[in-house]
Image 1: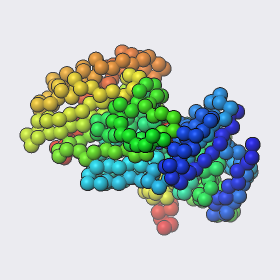
Image 2: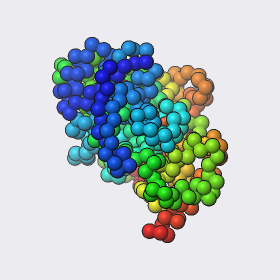
Image 3: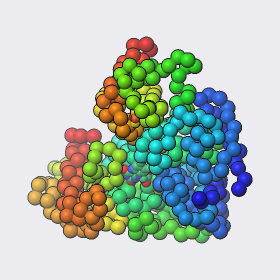
Length: 291
Length: 159
Ligand SMILES: Cc1cc2nc3c(=O)[nH]c(=O)nc-3n(C[C@H](O)[C@H](O)[C@H](O)COP(=O)(O)OP(=O)(O)OC[C@H]3O[C@@H](n4cnc5c(N)ncnc54)[C@H](O)[C@@H]3O)c2cc1C
Ligand code: FES
Ligand code: FES
């Protein structure tokens, strides 16, 4: 059984020093809903877990001039209860609220979801379409990476030894812009996405689309942006033909696997359907006909 | 391996224990503190049998480290009844026969209480979603939902 060394520093510098200086495998501990299970299953003799939840700011969320500064370790239960944040990024909050059960929500964090870097992580497509950025600190100082460049493969990301995610920064959406996130699971609760779709849509006064982003999850090794889907939408009134073009672009961009939750064919089809539906939801949000 | 000393509050009582840093809160409750009401079903966050509250937030104690309890307020099934007087939820579970083997019951009661603390008049849908992380292999859930909704009504009338 793995022997755990636990530290709970109260500064970022303290956490970086522990992570960078460790001669045994070391992980940041946020809500532990992935990490505690992984640690128990690990074959390491020893592991250092650096609990970052006592560091000021790591579990805070603030809207600053309409932009979101999200402490990566805030629990989803706390995050999704913030009505002022839901009002600006309903799709992102929806994605966070889909993670696990009430109990899992009580601990799971958006930062943990991102850093665990599962292909099916629900918040990642929603973060990508909102142009979110990761502020990473390490022994060499601070750097900022766009979420779409953060995840590099299945369970892999661009952070080096000693680095940690300090902040998730989500810019204020342009005027008349809304987001949406949908996923497909075989049941109504407690399952991992078979396919997911995040979108952000900007409309002009006449209801024509002037800007769009489409990202898909669980259908490739990482969540990916689908620029061809967004391009199909821009300059149109989002009629059904246009939505089908965007759906086909998402299907085309996907490269899913078959597993017990869904086949390649099914995932490629469903991701297109989700893209269409998410676009309609985001557009309805801009028009004010749904929340 | 040296054990870590932890001071916490469990069901209102200041409690101290020693644990390995890798022990879960569930391990500590059952094995160190002999609080056996909290059950272990899966140890992976899926079944909810280990539900407790940490600082009033419902969590799976199998996915919390014992050392994280330092300075926190923990609520377990043992703190739900008022000495010999059962909580309304417990009475309603008996009345509605909402349990058979009983393994899931402590987790369900702790979860349902957390729901009613936050929302005294949940709809059936809200109740089913809230309790979706509590698995039961015996009852088929319907009696559980009836019991919780009935308890909510009784508690509202009593309030
Ligand atoms: C029953 C159950 C259901 C689930 N359902 C879903 C679901 O529907 N959708 C979904 O997407 N996920 C789901 N998950 C997975 C998990 O809950 C999420 O990925 C969650 O967001 C992880 O957050 P955490 O705070 O618990 O992370 P942790 O487990 O603490 O950490 C996860 C990983 O990220 C690293 N990490 C965390 N924070 C940082 C940081 N600030 N800097 C650097 N590294 C960091 C850790 O070292 C670890 O490698 C489920 C898990 C369970 C147990
Ligand atoms: S034992 Fe914790 S969720 Fe099953
Ligand atoms: S009563 Fe047996 S598992 Fe629920």
